[in-house]
Image (cartoon, rainbow, N blue to C red; front, side):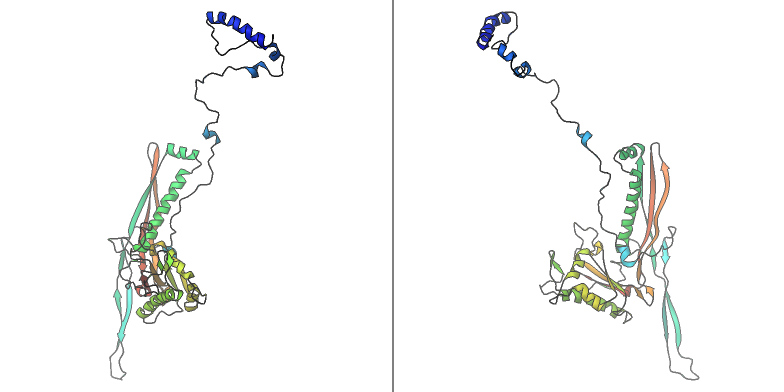
Length: 368
């Protein structure tokens, strides 16, 4: 049966199929013999559709089967804790039982007189003073439950260990802040805002018309102008110590990371500020801390909205440490308290702020 015969045959029997209830409007003919004997199979020639699906169409795997957890954790970065490094966090002072600590000061006094065999004039003496500081204890808690610890384990996270590290970091960061600003309401002072320090100097006017080293992030002072501002702070220390401190003394220039960029300012001879400092003050170290920056929306730990601050701290005068950060408890981990399906633990630290034993060995400048 050829194609024409197949069409004619279908037209002849189609009414019989329709009468029996089998209606095939898309059918036009029977399959010709030539198609049955050709290379293409009847399956390839079929014109009927697969019909509609009763489930949602999907040809992909569940996404979770092709998702993996990277074993290396990404940690949020905080500002570095530099206040202790600037002065040197040397030792523990007292313990957490102490509320107040007295730091005795002895001053030599006296007078001399012209010699005479029968004279009893002249006197040598000492004067005592007892400045004191108050400690401040601060704490935090870690809490962890059975289920949340197990669920964190599915993400390869050591939940309890990470909580302990977070608590230690939190206490350490607050302690570092107390070294800069002390604790309000207590006799607990920081290095930057200690009330016994001499007043901050103002920067000298610069060639561009202002007083700061930068103008909206761009250099606004020459290398020589920056050097002269630093020189003025050193001069203040020399004056207030009556020459006990000289330019050969070991000292630290502390300033914000932004202000430290000025150390790379070069003069017309290609000499950097840092090179000028090495020549003029061979034992001066330069260190940075964000607390010396201006207080802004992006730097809540800054000292003042007036501008950046710098300080020069002499290491020792007459063999005595000028200032040092002091703590009475670095971290005290209290007992773990069990609950029905969780645990909690308190952790405590304590600070004296910064002990300024010889405030005259420190001076600063604000608005750089």
